[in-house]
Length: 183
Image (cartoon, rainbow, N blue to C red; front, side, top):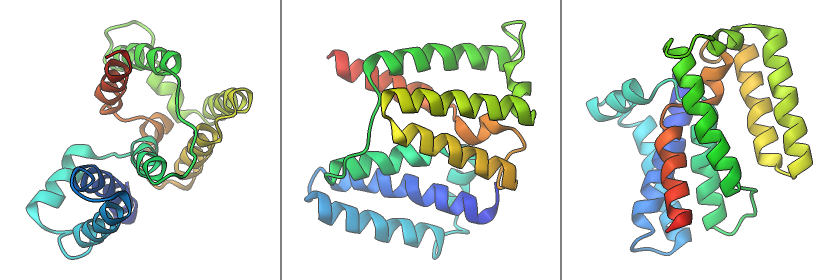
């Protein structure tokens, strides 16, 4: 991922993390303001510091979905209506993504990851995601899919579309979201 792309993605995650932590003591607008200041400081003043460089090294490639979900959470908390995902959608995603990771690590015999390099396969997957988003009314999902394809086509990150769309941290995030919905 480019330096600018990594900085934007890291800023989105810093906004989310600081917003959630500050939100324990501050009102949402104040927490959001503090979060934006922390994000700007992290990608400008502290960009070359060990903690920020370490976060980029550990989390990169960020892709599109992880920062988008972070910003979505902040927006929803501030009262901006952004569609989310149902419990069934989260469960299906979690199972499918774990299976996908198993194929990428050769635990399962089919290698779906290689389809992320092929333009026609990517176009088909984005089209399917957009059709699903149209049927369910989830413009957020369609936007992320289209922006992920745009970033992939423009070469703003990995040469594999799946790297632009997914991140391994989505597994614990989806699992925790499912657990919190059950509890």
